[in-house]
Image 1 (cartoon, rainbow, N blue to C red):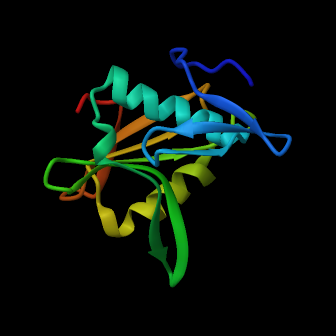
Image 2 (image 1 turned 90 degrees about the vertical axis):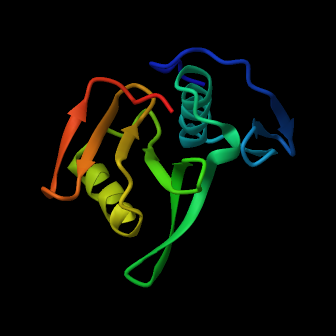
Length: 146
């Protein structure tokens, strides 16, 4: 798989039925190793090992509803009291981070109203802090620590 703009981590990867799988330490199971999953697994490890987010307070492909449609948030991180704090949208490295990606995560955040939103394709990472009182946001230089 492609080298990403994230630290290198020691992943458990196996071949099953001719297809590669990677172990997801949040879901505690092997999942199909797609280009998007490669980015998601790197970002999970980054959030946990570099930013201190506990694996037990993360949801992966977390179910949500938007306009009556079932959707899934790539990564959602919670505080101790299970209040969502960070919502992350992951794309594969060959997908550009565009306004469309920001629109997608904003839609997913409609009900959650988390303090922080992040988007990544493994090469570029953007994080913004939301201000719901002023209906605004500001981009941050780094992902905040837990």
